[in-house]
Length: 334
Image (tube, rainbow, N blue to C red):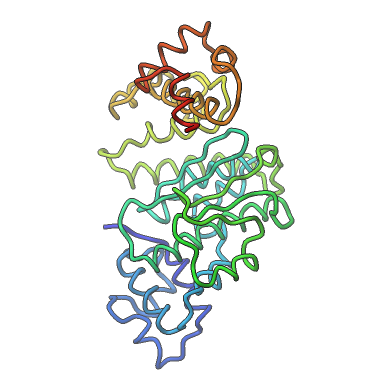
């Protein structure tokens, strides 16, 4: 069973301000009560989706997500929000969002790739009703925008937002809520942030609180994922994807987890992975990015990725993708 933070249900209630006679209609089809929404930390996703559908009918406003979502912020992430808020800079704030966002919405997966931009994307693991999915994506992006603007202290206008659904009928309202350009029918929902903004220092940085929150979040993630979920594999991938080449060594990532390199390698093996394989996976992602987005020669890309020569890079690329770098570039450009 999937769960979601009641934070979002409370925002809906505050936006609608239902009269006593409207509460039965708002809660119809759920096991929730007004008191439960106010005092419980989470509710089943299925019941939240039902409540959201009821709220759409009560409000008769398909743009309801833009209304209550404008108030969503890091507090929606609970302990993960504290880790994000107290991180040293915007990049690490967004990485905390990626690492710990599932604590408050365990049906969502997030990733961030550091390249010419900070590419943040989120997607759900299950099928959702169209209107419910659209609103949840709107609220996710508004949460990101509010987080970024909280760090910057000003409107975030230099980015680009992506929405994995068709342009809604009320798209004319988007410029009132989203302060950067918006694109619809995207492969995944998220935001591109200029790379330089990732280094912007957070005014809320607190080293001791950040470390405590990260440790607590790791414990909570272990409880959430259980023994069958590949927690360490996911964490290492996130760490690797948040760096430009040269990628960090296993010792550096292990230290960030307060583990020895040997222990990290053992836990990755338990997840059916290895540091070398994950590193090669991310290097291949960078290679594909460079081949598609730049005109750099294959030899130049090989050097950027840390290969000793172009031949080694070509062999590794063909092993991963089944074709040469030149053939991949031609296919991607066609």
